[in-house]
Amino acid sequence: MVNMNPWSAADLLALFDMWAVMMVGMMVPSAFPMIFAFAGVSRSRRAKSLSYVSTSTFVLGYVTAWMAFSIAATLTQELLHSAALVSSMGIGTSRIFGGIVFMATGIFQCTPLKNACLRLFVAKT
Image 1 (cartoon, rainbow, N blue to C red):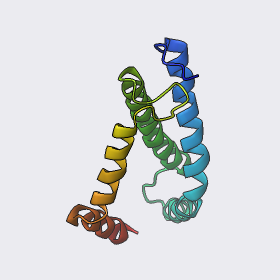
Image 2: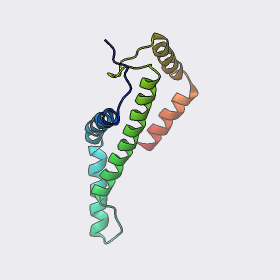
Image 3: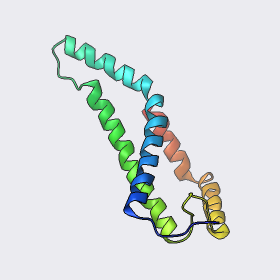
Image 4: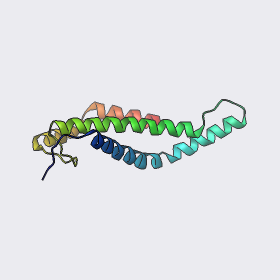
């Protein structure tokens, strides 16, 4: 049975916690190479008496960005739940909505925007 009851503030907090833990748990380990590189640059700059940013500040900024994403994901999931498009478990309840999302992601794969996003990402790495 799908539970479509409105969420309480405690439910939303638990949902945010889920998103936050998942994002930090998945994204911070994948950033370790960059974190280690940043730490090396900071150490080198500190040794030369140049200005530097601590590695912990860098990591805090990275985690803060993922917390902002977690807030956006929580609000989006609440919006979809309120519209009865997903259940309390995050399961799609509308085949039409699911089909539209599926088709939109497929169409996106063939757009110049996708290639522009990929070029932007590759240029920055």
